[in-house]
Length: 100
Image (cartoon, rainbow, N blue to C red; front, side):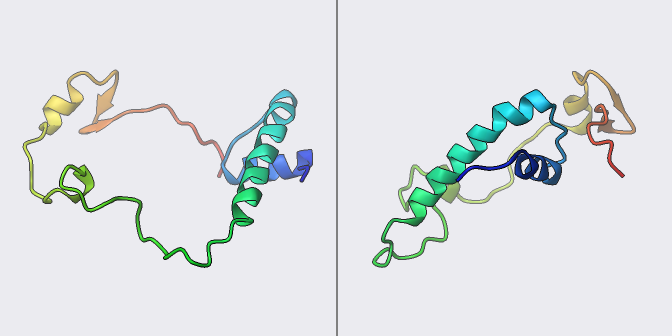
């Protein structure tokens, strides 16, 4: 499977990424390798494998299976006190998506 530069740009657009020509040439083969690996996984015979809802196991040490209890946490003031920039009770972050 060989992806075209148009395919790479399409995927990048779906992810709201702007790639330079150099990045398209760099990431194209990497994306192609990932898709080839997924294709190999699709060739496996999984007819006898039961479907799984999650990849956890029922051991007691599994943190995903602990009781869902409220725990002490930071106050809003404590959480924001070390923020580089805050305002209105929220973290301020630079705009990263410029598309409309």
